[in-house]
Image 1 (cartoon, helix red, strand yellow):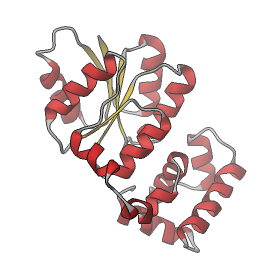
Image 2: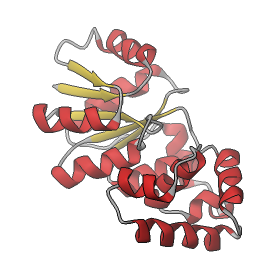
Image 3: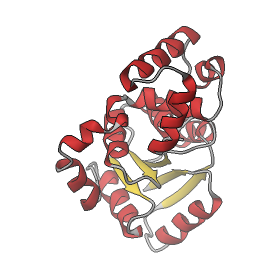
Length: 206
């Protein structure tokens, strides 16, 4: 099984290699940013992609969207430090087949690769339970009001990117990004981009 890891932390990539070293059938390659990851996917057609959400330029959500636009059958596992169930829900919304928290059991990643590689899906028990029993609190979270695309634009705004830069990064028009920013402010009940950035930081998007 060919597995592509896209993560900008060399220690994480090295840890994944060590973790999967005993899995003889897995051939691992890695990339450190979305652009390289997209090129490697196009060139190598891996069986499973493990993608970190927080990448240096565009996020793992955006990379997943691009990969699935190339190949709707691509098998993607989102990999993140954030175990907030909303991030897992947005990963599923984008089209990922699995979600694994870096703070969880390392064996979760091995099991996720096996199950997603076999055509299945995977969520760690704790995250699946959090989603299933989130109740009203889930809907009250500001992030629950945003789509994955809106979360991507919010993350880039919080990184100090201009609307023009964001439009270029997410392959969209300036007008679309500006309209999305306005819609986010309405959804979240804030008036300025500075307030959006503060909310992004408080919610763990930044």
